Length: 238
Image (tube, rainbow, N blue to C red; front, side, top):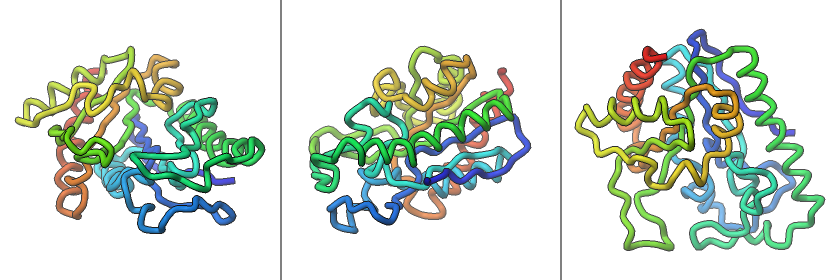
């Protein structure tokens, strides 16, 4: 069983990082070059460091995934075939092709289920006033090289846009070009927040930072400062 890492905190906030890890548990062979585990298809680059720094800056508890999204995508419905991806941005994940149903189910039971059980338990214990989902995205997809993603940051949401609207204004007021449900829509990919925030009517911020802004300690520090201020401001509205 692979459990998430839980960071302590006293604030009535909860940070969640679904794709913070590139780790592959022993016994699983994805059949990909090891270098691919450092690519955006395997991990949301920079989100581990960013979430940890935000946790300290805000004194907020955090739940950080410890397994690569190529093993099992924790931000997808387990019934979705893409939860155990056979390919990603043009890369074939050979070890996931024709994966026996019992092996797929084992990953769901051993990784996906405990992760979401841990989130539910923390929410029941903390009753956070605001949940913050931390992700990053690549400046351009290998399969769509002509489609540049100019937003340094985006805010994602599905039906509940209460916190998102405040976050968009707060970030734009800093002169940032903010993606409103960009680079993709939270109405399409929002499983963790749909399950744990929207279903319980807890306001949430779905944050996507372009990963070229998180490649250095200075970049992570800059976004920590910006986002800690934004999150604190949004929290005061609830």
